[in-house]
Amino acid sequence: MTNQLRRLTLLIGVIMLAVTACAAPATPPPPPAPTAAPIPGFHLITGNGISLQLPESYDGGKANSEDFKLVLDRIKSLGSEFENIAKAVESNPDLYLLWAFDSQVGPSGFLTNANITSEQVISAVSVQAYVEAVRKQLPAQIKVLSQDDLTVAGQPAIRLVSTMEQFNAKQAMYLVKQGNRIYVVTYSTGIDEFDQRLKQFEQSVQTFTVTP
Image (cartoon, rainbow, N blue to C red; front, side):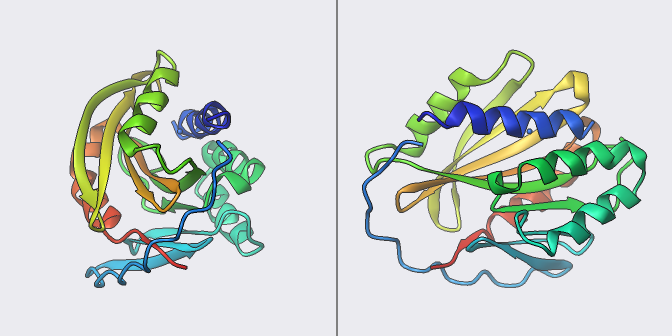
């Protein structure tokens, strides 16, 4: 998985600023996932063949689209302390299938955000094997607090919860395999806000949908 370390490094870089392939033979794509039922107070954000429901205060979309420049401008409008985040996302638009942020900045001052990335893998690679490889590459400043098996939109998945205390960052990362791709749905927020926001993250990730 030659691209894993590069992708992980770029993700970690964005996490820091916010205070985060193997060539594979084609496999038959999974059947289209059913559209998730609307969650009251949430709205649908789409990008690059995937969609996710997030609270109405979130803004975002397809990071490598022309329209996303408006999203970056909204981040910058929150204050000069957030300009580096906008620049980091703008510099790596192809890394993200979707990137979104909560315009209601919490008391920690952390710009809560959600993003989705993916990587093509050979069919024999399981989510568990992928997670094991990722964890071996994590730098020391990222502390994994828990790893749990669960389902995301009916598919087997793994959730990693980690912190970067020196940046007041805590995140929930959900990894799920569909077809020959591993999708990583990541929610990052301030440490003091994480427990309060976790319910929303859990609701949101269950609406993750891959469209054909």
